[in-house]
Image: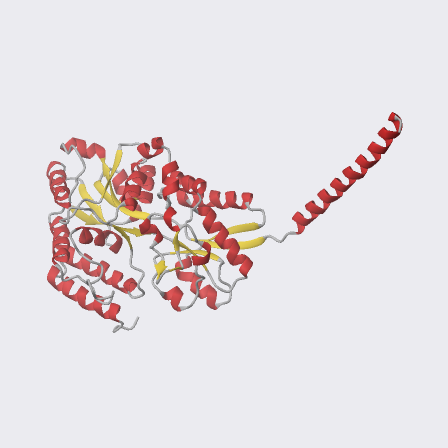
Length: 425
């Protein structure tokens, strides 16, 4: 065969090959175009601010990298509305709900996440992992993790001569007395009367969420730890060294220089920084040690759940999003932008030291998450009712509306009634 004939034959077969490749490419493109996109609705309650912005960014990131799944955020309070939506036949696929109180499982509203979380346990901080676990089943996994901590006005501390943050609750009381004496125009401490903030000092003083050996059926509020904790805050209040306050009120008064120490969380610390806007330096320290010689804390925050009554494809797509959320890169972004600490150890290792040095709120939260004395808030069904009683009676005892003994006696009786099932919920 001469050179011209060979060249002609080669070009002919090459043309056929290119045509075949072109045809396969067209088929592939057509297939990709017709592959169904699984639509997922995520109900979450953050509306504006760094948390909402961070979550919106991450959802866009996920959608961009998962072309066959599309997540749409619907800003709504899923904890209150999701069960109603389920009853109406239109529940979200994904939702973020607050601390588990049993109502969702009682309604058989949730898909177990166990099949989708295999191999993930060692990646999570223990207190985060067990937060939504019920009898070995995960129906809820933390989406944003909050840890109680104190934010303080470093300028005020310096003015009154306090050299370092308190390491014990006793030292905190001494510092509050100094702040009040040397600057009578400020409020030394603004504290939150909610269980996530009341129970940590109680636990640090040797208290228990449940009576040991009661199998979670009895409370332990007549123990010495409860009396010492309630009396501690009662004295602060009666000495005008503490007030009760929440959220926006704390932030505005703190930013105005009216409060020396503000009770809050890592996410709250980020909001305080925004409110202060550089007017004075802001520090943060962990909850102090109690009589046990160690500190204690409770994990709180919203958690992801997958609602029932959707297709297997939607369940799988929702689980894909959840697992992606806990991969290192999204967790690092979440930790650096939302104000919440990452939920995974792998992400914490990848956080730049420069970031942690400049964001003590996150650093303190991470240390608390790693502590063996940080535990999840109870997810026993009746404890939701117990928490309301704790909040109410703690406030009444501390503000002097009733004696500490009467408050704790009533608290023990009502808590036991709820936990034992004797009270109608």
